[in-house]
Image 1 (cartoon, rainbow, N blue to C red):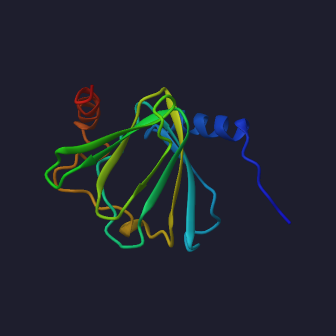
Image 2 (image 1 turned 180 degrees about the horizontal axis):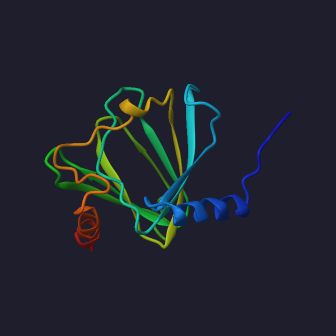
Length: 157
């Protein structure tokens, strides 16, 4: 019988990787292959990370997000980029887990200095089929990405 333990050292190493990343987030795959039927990813995201609004178009691409530490806001958009729903998740929110069905346009905004999220979804993972970005979505790395992220934060409250 084998097992893996994920302790505070695991989280600290992932946080350090996120800090060193230009994307301000880091992934730790808990699955061993992208071909596995269940994909499990521990994600550390820093407050500065920007995840462009996107959706998953295939019927098997339901995502389950579980906030383990920190706080984030899940934002759901309509097809024109209007905000339909905001869900505070993690510390102090009363919500730690959300399931997102395919074809739901969404993003996650990190509200704390850093947050750790467990993402679980059905495999296999095929990178060029993993996400669809609406035409209006500001792309990661775009010169407007930082101001768009701040605008998303400013629309709340």
